[in-house]
Structures are given as C-alpha cells and as structure tokens.
Image (cartoon, rainbow, N blue to C red; front, side):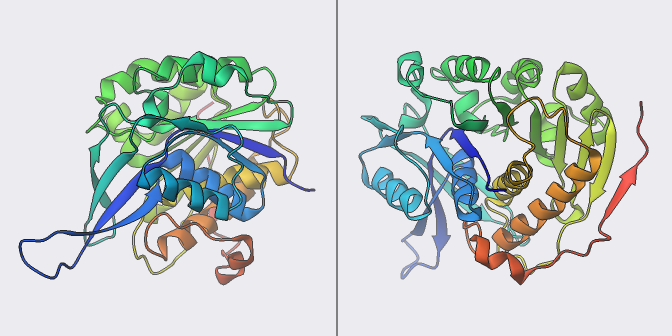
Length: 328
C-alpha cells in the first residue's frame, strides 16, 4: 500500500554548529537546515511518504537554504508562506555523547507569525495526518492560529503532536498549561524523556502516559535515547530498544523517529482517523521501524535523515521489543 499524504506544520531553523577556527579570536560555524517540523517533513519525504510542509520561509540567506534543502528532499512547499521576517537561528554546542545544547536567535522571526488567514486556504482533502508541535505550536503570536488549524483538521485527519520543549525560548509552564488541550486534539503524542522531565518533573513514564491518555491522546510514545522508546496505546504498553549505531550526534533523531512512526502507520493504512483499528502489535512494528530511522540519523552529522534505500544498512533484531503490563 502506498503511503497517504502527511501535512506538517511548523518551523524551519538554521542550525549552526561550531567548527575549528583558523584563529583563536574567530568562531567558525557550519550551518545546516533544521527545525523539528521541517526535519520531520524531510524524513517523511525521504522515506517515500508524500509530505507537505506548511512553513513561513524568509527570503534571507537561510530561507533560501531551507527551500533548496526541502525541495531536494521532495517536500511539497506549495503552501509555504513567503515571509518578510528573518529566519530563526540556533547555535548548537555538542557534548561528548553528541547531544546538542542550543542557544536561539528567534526574536520576531518568520516562524512564529502565523495568521488565521494564512492557514484558512489550506486544503486537507488528501491529507491523512497533520503533524505539528515544537515552537510554532506554543510561541506567540502565531500559536493560537496553529491550534485553531489543528482543531479544524481533527475531524478529517489523524493529529500528531511533538511538544519538543525549548525552555530557553518558552518557559515549560506555558507548555504545561496547553498540553491537556493538545492531548484533546491529538491522536499521537510523541515526546522525549527530556520533554517528560520538563513537563511532569519526577513523574514515571507510565504514569505520564496515563495522564495524557486521560486527556485524550490514544497513542503516547516517549523516546529515551539509547534506552529506546516506551509506547502506550490506551494504557497497553510496549518497550522498544534502540538500534545500536555509532553516534555522530543526536540532532534530529527524535524528529526522524516521529517520521518513521507516522510513515509506517500510513503505509499500513492506519492513518486518517482516530486510530480505532490500531493494535499494540501495529505500534510495536511502527516503533521498531522508527528506531531504525532514528539510528541512521544519529550515525551522520546534523539533522540528516536517511533515504528509503538506506534503510537496509541497519536491520533491527526482532526480539528488541517487550510488552509491559498495563496499569488498566
């Protein structure tokens, strides 16, 4: 079965990584196109899912880089807004495990200026799933327009949300205040263990899943880096181990996991509604596939997800998932 279209809404961010400079009083940066929603759209398109990105793209040097990168990956930009504002810049510093700490230059940039008028004309007839999250869903002034777009899309498409908490730009309390509302809109909630700690400090993952199920999200997936992922479908749970790989950095790994999850569900005809036909076995298979996509992203520098023909490089062990007792 060919995968259906997935529409992704959110930001494109210029990710700048430090490199060795020629002199001590210089800072050399290598800039790669990134941003959680854009990374997810690229990964979906490279896997073979028709992916459309709703983004506000500046006409500056970074915006031109985004357009070239997205188009080369096969992302549909037919509804991207030509924005007058500058692009968002994030400067990343990597630790010894390849994990990035970002500092953002995001004041009044293009990504957060969504208006209801810009989203009103978006046609969703061919869209089986709408995925969004990250800063575009929470940063003013455009966040309310994005939430309204999700509410309008929910009757006809599966809704997927990745909070991708960025405390340097938006206080976690703002996410906490909106998360219950997002779960009421979402069918799929994918987040990292770092997000979990920021949103519900000290809460066990299983308890967090039940909290978000009660708020409305049917499928909750918490990615845990080298420890794999915990997936919970209405309280039934499965733990999937990570696929071993040499790690260059982890930038974009969570976005690639989300893309792998949605691609697999779409390919198997499970997107397009409220996930009523989804079983825990379907979730396990989708998470195993998503773990492979994420591992390949970790094996290269920056948010550079794999193409479909690269997936054979890693073959996950079919025994790497185990079912956990439900708390229900």
